[in-house]
Length: 238
Image (cartoon, rainbow, N blue to C red):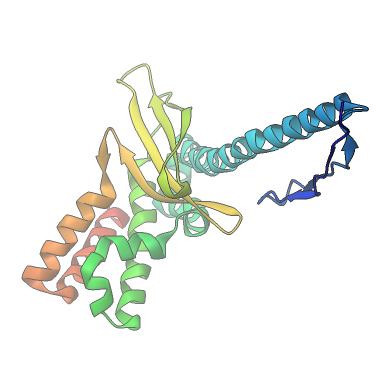
């Protein structure tokens, strides 16, 4: 049999995750006539390692995204259980830093204002973002203000287009039917951020975009800011 040599250059496989180091597969030239098995064995070992690394990477992403949601649920549950002792101000304070850090509020605000975003000055955009951030925190502090044995449960994590994830959860209690809470998340650098919450199939982001767009069109931007401030005050003084 004629002796043939197959030369396979080293291949570097980079994993976009700081927890995984680069994997390097090196296959040296092998005389196929003399020893075909080593090449096959090396190839299969490299292939298995490659598949293993890329199978594990999405799981790491799922874990990180799920942790963001479950930590939020932990704060909400504590607020509910200690609602009276904390009061509205205490519940607000417990949520403020976490929501500011783990919700992509600049992107959320841009999506909500839609075509109006580009028409406003940087000062107007920042004013809206600041107010909407306060409204988001106030809404959670107000709505999750009593405890009736509710428990949060993570159901699944679904990959979506553009590298996004949907973390599906629900609130269960003995007194009421389960309430679904689904979190749309995207990755920014090495962190997963919440960009939308869907409660029982209702996307609050879409509702606010339609509502706020109508107010800006009919009453103007200043009126929208005033109405958001009024809503925050209602939450502060129930």
